[in-house]
Image (tube, rainbow over all chains, first blue to last red; front, side):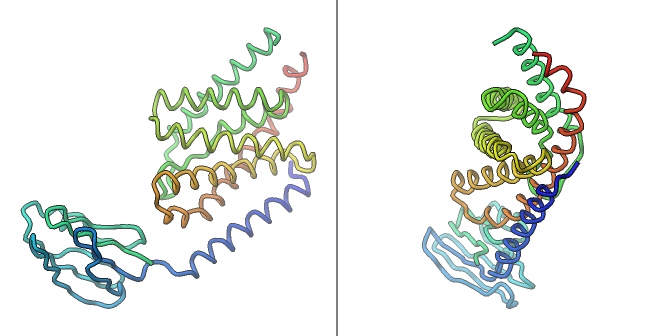
Length: 109
Length: 166
């Protein structure tokens, strides 16, 4: 069923994948939370440092909580509260958006 | 083209479509959206081996267009076409080398398929973070490719009689 060349090929592809995974993992995953207001950068926080930040914008105020590599909006004085219900962000690329206040929190490398 | 070949290719296209449908019935999830085993790859590999690149690409492209018209959309059509055509070409060149058996060729096909789709996703969505999934998707492509290769090799024994009657 398996030719010798097949086995060599399969094992080498496997090794390439594993080393690629190790390389990407070593490069580091999420470690910062970037907050932007109206498209401009407001602040960047370390995702592994427990903290609570009040983000004041001209449209309203949001409270961002960071703990154990996770970030979420604890409070917002906007009418729809969507950002509070969007839950927690952990992985790079994930984000929470507060549309009424034009606030975006996203996890970056 | 002989009527028999046309009939056979039509049958293979139908089989590939049904395999794609059967695949949807298997509850299977590795945590990344849209990941499938790719059973239709078995048909593409068989066609490549016995009828060459033209037949394999034609059947695969037709299959992808029909599947996406039935279940998908325009965006998923673009993704599938890219992955499908790339993996068919890759398997064609691997077969041409004559160094590797069905299983090795199919494994490369699976890897290239997922590689193409991930690159397409990164380009179309403009999010390079998708590339982070690449090693896992490639590994999974390899595994499903091996599976399809084993099935294709087993089937060849039974299909040889029909296909060589040309």
